[in-house]
Image (cartoon, rainbow, N blue to C red; front, side, top):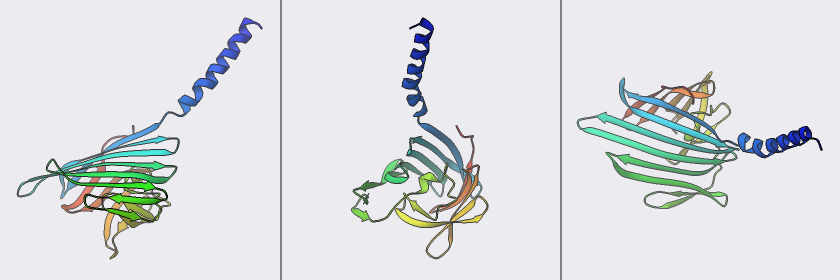
Length: 206
């Protein structure tokens, strides 16, 4: 075999060996949002979504600081995992003024969901394919139901205008409104215990 032919064969073999590892590299998306309440800046939300061959992991941190009659800070640390489009795990920790206030886990076990809170464990019989953690990089254009990880409840989500969606409560009152461009959440208005929270994207997709 000629030297040139050997080099070609070696090059092809190396391409076969290394191409799968390159193509399987996880795709990561990251962004941040500023948070305002009554026109005043109150904090930031950062989100990182990683997609590895259909397995999606989302990490989101919401940090809110407001000055009521006294300083008040609330922080949500949230991690959600999907496997081939089905929610497998969700973990939400809520901190108030630096101290852990609540700890909620949801795990998909043998076809059922186990919801574990600070006080008890509840079994949920349902199929969850879309939740709040997916809102940032996955426009809900064909989605009709959304699971709220923080409240452990399912809500209807409805398109109202082009690229605009709303979530209502059981009395048909609007809770949240989301606006998208190029499939990515750009802004939102969300009802919060402290008041209406306005969210605006502040950086480009990484």
